Length: 254
Ligand SMILES: NC(=O)c1ccc[n+]([C@@H]2O[C@H](COP(=O)([O-])OP(=O)(O)OC[C@H]3O[C@@H](n4cnc5c(N)ncnc54)[C@H](O)[C@@H]3O)[C@@H](O)[C@H]2O)c1
Image 1 (cartoon, rainbow, N blue to C red):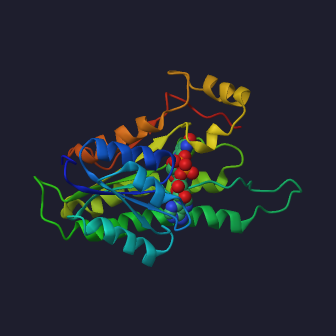
Image 2: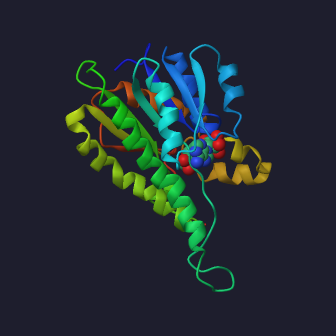
């Protein structure tokens, strides 16, 4: 499915990996709808990206808002691709420093944002794609974002790892569920990517992070994620797979 002229929604599109993906969609000649929080600078970013980009505010954990934002993309000639990048972490442990049970609120917050948000992207995205005619032998494709923490979560990531492992677990099931509709589902599991969050780190901390990546020994570039995401959307035989994008890093316990 060549993206040229097609409509792709990118959640978390106002920043980091989502923004890099939006740029790649535009570079391939596709149209992009940035879906991000109503309070984000999505409007401004869409203007900067220029023709082909629009902003549709929506919280991915709010089904009504998210559906309305996906409709904006769907009305631009039919939603063919969703790259779901909206997500975040919140440090917590099984037991806190005083030995008390870890916060259920922090656990639920991250599960809701990362896992339920991803299921929303799948179900609401697929619902729209299923209405479309086939292009070659498919109707559309969804790319979700996990993390290497799905496999080697570090201390303090119990909620984040659970949410990302859930996304990895959903990938093959969703690909099977949606096979009869001609909709593919894949997931990218990034390592340490150079997004705004990491830009704030001290130089020495950044260098020590880079040293943990075997090859290339640096942080991942957001554009490397964007390229993989658009390649997955375009490659009709790639389905039900989680791809690590991580320079061969295997995370240590802390
Ligand atoms: N940066 C990394 O090193 C890294 C590594 C592994 C996985 N990831 C995953 O990649 C994804 C993107 O990360 P990033 O580094 O680009 O983060 P980022 O903070 O730069 O961007 C995330 C975007 O998501 C938006 N967002 C947050 N909650 C939302 C909600 N409820 N509804 C809609 N939008 C919402 C934010 O406003 C923001 O624009 C996340 O799922 C993250 O867990 C990132």
